[in-house]
Image 1 (cartoon, rainbow, N blue to C red):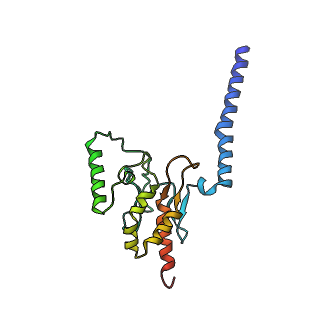
Image 2: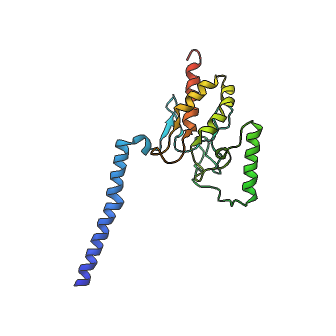
Image 3: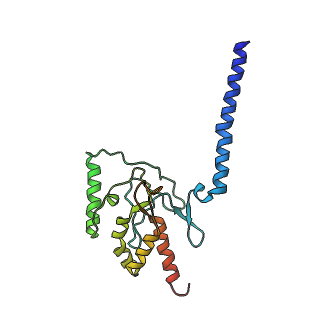
Length: 200
C-alpha cells in the first residue's frame, strides 16, 4: 500500500509542477507582456508611415545604399522580401582565428572601408557574437555621416542631430558602450526626407 500511495503522490506532484511550469507560468508571462510591454513582447516591429512592417529594432538589417548607415557585417544571410523564407538564425561563423577564410573576410572588409575613405574600426570589420546586433558604435556612425549626407543632399549637422537622438546609452548606465540603432536611424532619415519633399 505504501508503494501505491507514494506512486500516486509522485504522479500528483509531477502533474502540479507540469501545470505550474508549462501552463500557468507561461500564461502569466504572456498576459503581462501583452498588457505592460506589447511592443517589446511582439518583436519590437517597426512600421513605416503606411503602417507596413519594415523590420525589428532588435535585429540587424542589411543596408547597402549610400543613402543609409550600414550595419555591422554578419555571417547571417537575411531573408529579403515578403515571400522569402526566414533564415535569420542567431550565431557566429565559428571560424577559428587562424582560419584563412576569416582572415580573408576581415581583410576584404577593411580594404572596402579604406576604399570608402573610412577608418577600419572593430565593429565595422568584425561580426557580433549573435550576428544580429542592431547597433553600431557612435564612432562607426560618425564615420558614415559625410557619405550619407552627400547621398541625401543634406547638411551633416542634420545627420549628426539624428545620430544623437538615436544613440542608446549603457545598459543600467554601467554595462556595455553607447550604440546607435541603425534601423531606427535610417528610418528617421527617410521620414525626414519625406516631410522635406514638396507637395507631400
